[in-house]
Length: 434
Image (cartoon, rainbow, N blue to C red; front, side, top):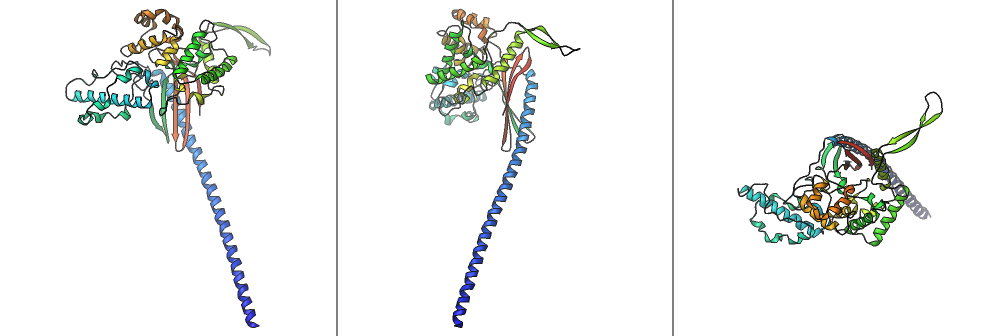
């Protein structure tokens, strides 16, 4: 009997020990879960606080850099350069990744040959007479194969890496930059400022023109541009529908005349108001249209995702890169690439546009055009077509975009400002921040 009681006591003790162990394990799991949850929340809160600090730094750097860029734009006077013996930027948009890399390799080798001959005293460093000229995209296929050059025998070739070579644009930096992008630090934020030539791009407002005298040519130029950009018929029609919706909200005008409008003037002595006639200048009407369309063209009415979609595999080439989305109305013939020139000269004659664009690209590499009259004189055969395009083209850009990006930690802030520069004085059209 006593032995049975002893055995039952042992079993009861073991049972109580198991219960205690189980409760202890449960408590440990609960405490571990609470500790993990608490540490996760603390870490998340710390991360949020740090992001707020980083974003504040990035936003401050972005805003400060934008103010700096706007203040210094008045002092920037872009100068076109001569590029007679260098690859031209005009047809880079149409090259595949393989063709583009081959062009860069050929260009780097030619630069290395120039450096090597200069070091050997054969020719001056700025003499690029051995450089093959690329007049258009088809000429690219006639460039000598890079494998034909004895790279193993070249010492200067190491000075020019193809991966670091860029094809100079009309101002020297890569198209469409007006100046080399500036990079610096403001506090903890790393800032980059880019100034682009908006007159070098296709003005999307042309597709909104309702003037019967030029509407047919405008649509022809729009389709030329879209086909170069790889849009199929459904894509072109979809973009037309979107632009039609914008056109129903506000009419896009190419030219303005001074107009009189009625304004209400409050009385200084009573609550009554009186009306008066006020003349609105053409410049003021243009500025108002620029601001209105800057908002409309950056709204959800336009499928920017479709425009930003790359059309060449492996390269960051999209229609959005070549479209002026800020209500510009003219194209600079000295800085626009081939497809933009063809769209512009479609206003004169769609059939003559490719030939005129080709002639301009060949001529401006040696000497940029100073005015439209000199263009007519150099191309007398197409003078009538050029005359019909005069209000759509220019030889000096006055419309620019300033893009600012600031990064601090994991936070990023950006801003884009559209600026017109008339008679040397910059005027902000619109600013979009992100």
